[in-house]
Image (cartoon, rainbow, N blue to C red; front, top):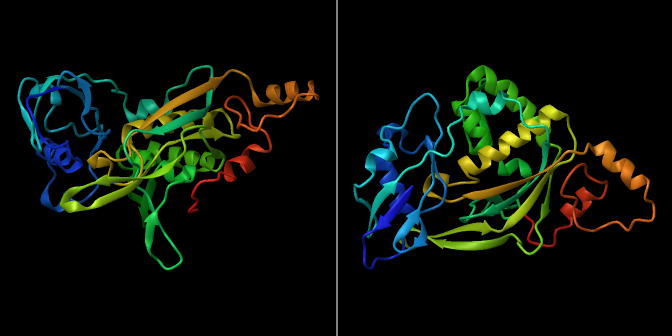
Length: 309
């Protein structure tokens, strides 16, 4: 959406203001209000200059359309805290169903590497030895993609990228695809992005509370697997941008940008080229494309930042 701000002066737009607006657009019943939302807020209205703002939202449910389409609000001022924002346009940029996303063939080049950068603080917590919750700022790949909640052998909910599939994709398709994904995630490695260190960030929230999250970037690489694993990895990366990462994604936290890197060379070909050049000096930077080398995992785990896992 592109919006024009009518306010001459106002305090900054807050996550709780945006969340309140979307709860008016897309309300849930009182008993479901505290449950996971059918939508994700990809950050907050971002200033473009000349009173213009850009805002991206995702409706996650294929079967149940949103009660109100943003296109219907063009020209109608919307109150966001102290601001009056008038939608000027609403453009649908992604309209593939879960069935298409999870089953359609990918391109000829397999996706094995991606750079993930935060746009808003990513909120994650873990428990220390005493049981106290502390910020988690160097997450394992498994935590980046969310969680699936099961009970009695069936899926009852979930969060993040895999949670969206568990909750909203066709059940018969979701079960087999999630099994494939969890098998492949064991082969996903993380590494720091040079110059974009993951760091702790504070964000002022309602009632003078402070939300602690992390900002920064990291690289994800699929170290092995068959073509079906690389296709599932590519779908996960798409979902990562659409659903967000961590807690409070329905309030705009955990918005990330994902930039994929592709290669047409098979891992075996890359290894063969290295063997033919024995005098080559190995690089310390993690490999970005193609296959991975034996030291890549160790280097990723030697990251010198704050580790909670």
